[in-house]
Image (cartoon, rainbow, N blue to C red; front, side, top):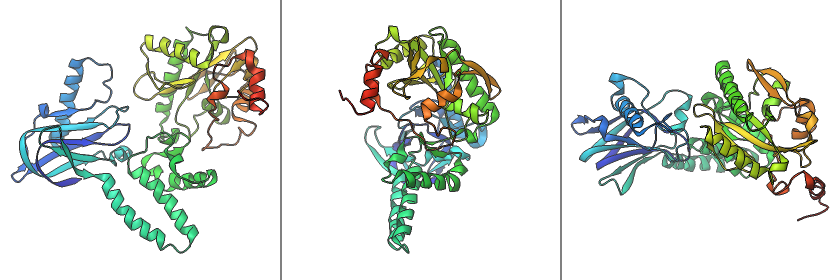
Length: 421
């Protein structure tokens, strides 16, 4: 991509919107005399991929190496500059050292399925590094296309055709704007669940497969459908590393939720899923409720060097290695029951869950519930055998806040609408 007409600037900044990485392979800045001779020290970035927790010296060395690749890619090769996966509005900045009348900027994106990450690219210029003006904004291009699309919608052969065209464009626009990592973004469309499912199927099969992306209940993500066998095995091994660590905290730890479905259905991870859930059950005698137990598990993992993210009611995102996270869900157990969230308000008989049984998943031996069939029916309902790519749990925190097994009767009455707190 070539951006022209930057005018007099000293600083140039490339950034993308939302949470996720910026990955640029090569940048070349030109004035009227040709390409500028830029130096590695002139490049800074908001973060660096794979460098979380590294020393300042290591980060500086990595920045120099990646800046060299970014500026001199045609000569030295490499992978350009890649910011961290969890960065928010990531950026790469180049200090030209002096006010320069920039005539054009050549930006080389990566050439694989992840090129879509830069579809919300903005290029900005500044004379002092404080006040920035926009040189290029990909969203403005989409806005211009939107005018043309709206004209086509207005001229549709029928109202039904116009509505279908609008729904497709709304989804495509979100994708092109770079909001592909926003959790549940598909819910921003004002459509019925049936329309959402149909539209998701069309967009998945006609568009997103080209980018190894898929719309699911988790948003737009790279599902297991596009993972290699080695990638899946390593990910399950990461889950088992968490299981082993958590065994020092509770005897009751397992692989749960979708991974259990995966094993029962095919012995492989479900194509339309994208994560593995580790479940630890804590003794309800020691904790007031699930959030309290979740905080204790979080502290335990953090002390042992695991990187955690999120502050959810019953789970955390945990990275065992690399940047791909697993979900660690915390439940409570008593003498005869286990209370899961999400899950049935009354919990599950503990005999259906613990002790776990060993099964083979992705060439690994993993622990799953003692009676996986009863567990799946309790968690997903009687229709669990039928694949539902758009399935979403019922997230009703109010029914579980401050609750333990001593109040199960009240919880059941509340669920039935017989009593409200």
